[in-house]
Structures are given as C-alpha cells and as structure tokens.
Image 1 (tube, rainbow, N blue to C red):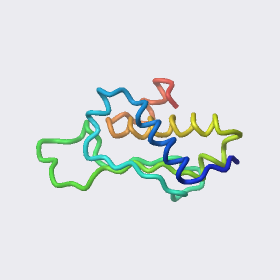
Image 2 (image 1 turned 180 degrees about the vertical axis):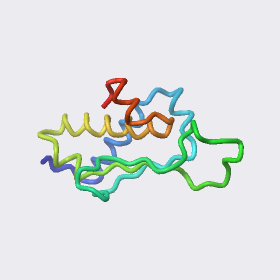
Image 3 (image 1 turned 120 degrees about the vertical axis):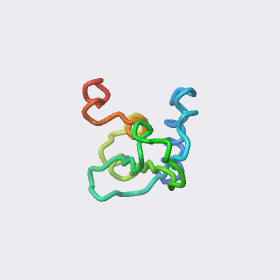
Image 4 (image 1 turned 90 degrees about the vertical axis):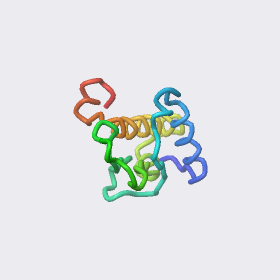
Length: 114
C-alpha cells in the first residue's frame, strides 16, 4: 500500500482529467468528478453513474450531473509505489470517462484498454 493523502490524490485525478484530449474534454458537460475513500466493494476503483452521451436524446434536460467517483483507498492499496498510483489513477479516470462516452467494459477490453 502507498500512503497518498486526499489532497495529493485529488491532484492526481485532476492531472488525469487534464490528460484527456481537449476535443473530448469539451464534450464532457454536466459531469461531476469526485474522490471518495471507498465504494461499495473493496476492489472498486471507480464508478460512472449517469446517462452516457450515446443514450441521451433531445429530451435530456433537467438531470443532475453525471458523476464519476474515483476511490482512493482501493487504488492506493494495490500499488507498490507512487508511480503505480499515478498510472492506476489515470487508467481509472480514463476508464470511467469512457463510460460517460458510452463505451462498455466489453468494448474497452476489446480495445486493449482494460
């Protein structure tokens, strides 16, 4: 386990979001990205909750923001050093952002991004 405080971990999440190509970042509207210590499972690294862009229709209005949650403790527990934490945070953020764009776990696996 690597000890990474909440503030540092939050900066890593921000850096991972900043690494997303600007043309995709501009499409991420109505999305809140938050960091929590734990999710419903000790192995859950991140979670997307919302309506993917590919499923939104013209009647999509008035919804609360989609939410991407990145879980700090499961990520830091599985890492040997800070470099691995950085990589796992980036991977998890990109994975959850992909769900926002409507890309399934199966498709991510096919693309070799899993």
